[in-house]
Figure 1 (cartoon, protein in one colour):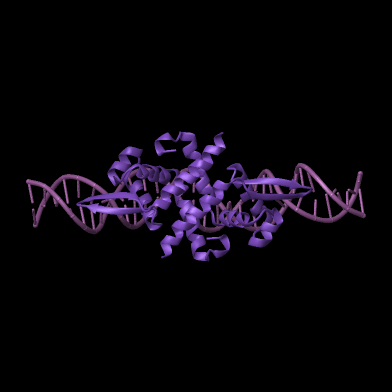
Figure 2 (tube, rainbow over the protein chains, first blue to last red; figure 1 turned 90 degrees about the horizontal axis):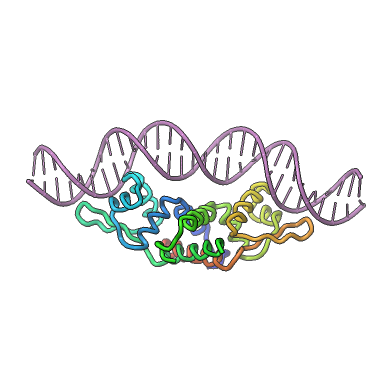
Length: 101
Length: 101
DNA sequence: AACATAGATAAGCACTTGCTTATATGTTTA
DNA sequence: TAAACATATAAGCAAGTGCTTATCTATGTT
């Protein structure tokens, strides 16, 4: 877990993970999913984004396993993949809180 | 701290924070600084990057207060700004570890 | 089977980003 | 004060990114 212990592959994945969370649209999606599971259409409506844009972002989030999928008929539900993601958000939020004090 | 409690400004800052950590070069710099305080030249040598590139990235890291500065004569030392940054890295690293299992 | 619905993918464009080269600022030493 | 050293900044370019419009796939309904 120490920096020295990171393999190159882990390192690249970590950068990609942060990069993926670093886009405002994707962060809003992840935020929304941290509240509850949502389907594509709900996300698009809720965040006032086009459906293709949402799908596009969800694909990236899926690729890095930040979100997971559950299919029910022709509806596809998304939720956060694991508890690390939520902790990552909150750890980041704490840092940002400090910035504004 | 819940998503609903985030102001717009906090939200934007959070996205910028992740985005800043999402660049491989900057992540390498932050990684290195999580081991120990380093000056600009040391970082450039250690990571085989040009001095202007390192300065450029450090400026961004400074802007988001991910790193802090200490000047000693004509040498400028950088280190992680607070303990949140280190936790953010480690939380991310844990997620990535899970990806590779 | 034909149609409707939910979502995924593709192509193309406007915009952003990170790097390099060149130069400027600021601090120490001769 | 002039020269040397450490770092910061600026301009410009190549590459990457996110959005839109258009289309495709898959599941469900009649």
